[in-house]
Length: 151
Image (cartoon, rainbow, N blue to C red; front, side, top):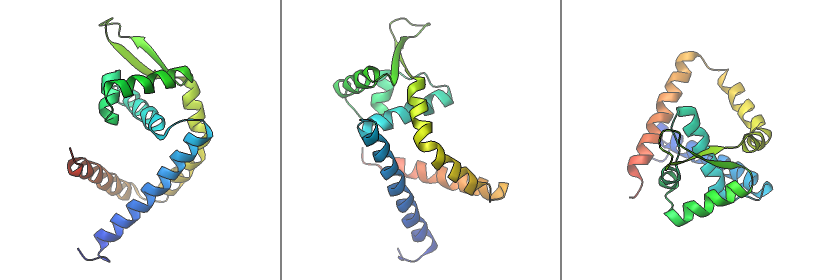
């Protein structure tokens, strides 16, 4: 593939954005005594809550590609830090559900709020049809990277 093609320029730009976001996540983790996997777990749980997905430890382990012991250690650590709580499913009392505590949300907003504000401000400079094109592109990138990931 030609290095300077429009498609490759997008690949390089996405890589740069990914690296920058990863650095922000690592800085957040370091400031709060978290492992980067802890941050990814909280993001998955927040996304699940927004989507109406009932998150269990098994579901979270699948998202993070962790085994059962690793997932238990992660959940125990986040619960001990007051960032996550376990609860029983009212429909099936045997099932454990995971929810992000308000403390974690507040920590996230205090750190990432300015970044989110900058991104929203940048997006406000685009027309609705342009934003839809960006949304479609990013969705396609997310799906294609999922398909290309080694199993």
